[in-house]
Length: 223
Image (cartoon, rainbow, N blue to C red):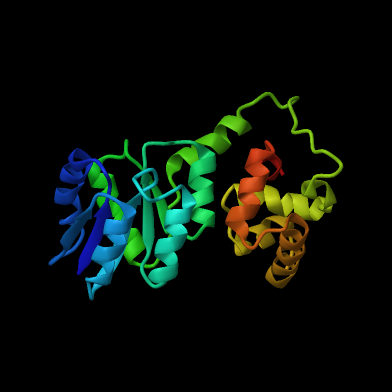
């Protein structure tokens, strides 16, 4: 099994390789200093299981690089590596199809766990996104988000807002249904309507819009 590690700083690659080799037995790490080199290496590898791409290395051009890689290797999960801990960066990469977002401040032992999670078919959302949510939640109760009339959020019904609050909290459909005394099929119907109104395709995109608007999930937590 091969893992592709693409970063333009050799020191970063040198520091990560020993941990990547511990993810599973028989792992071989392929290194690349740019997106073009990463694509070439990926084409030359028959059993590529995972790719880790630095968000700001040469050739990436932000999310364009991720899109290029995913277009050529749709079956290979991609983790984005970055020194940024901005919620916008993490949300954007996950929305664009990344399997997760790894800040360069993450400890090596933690990275091993993240890679094993992604190789098992899951997505990884970094803790600082939840910390961002908690910071919003800790704000004074009198400071409520102001939603403009032309905002897609203003089109949501009170029930859809309740569900959106719980999505921000990471609640699955079963939990939402139980908390709001609804059938799970009803929750799914509300979600479809909500996604249509917000112009999004999934829960991650809906949560991003809510968080950026200052909706922290407070309402659901207190209901």
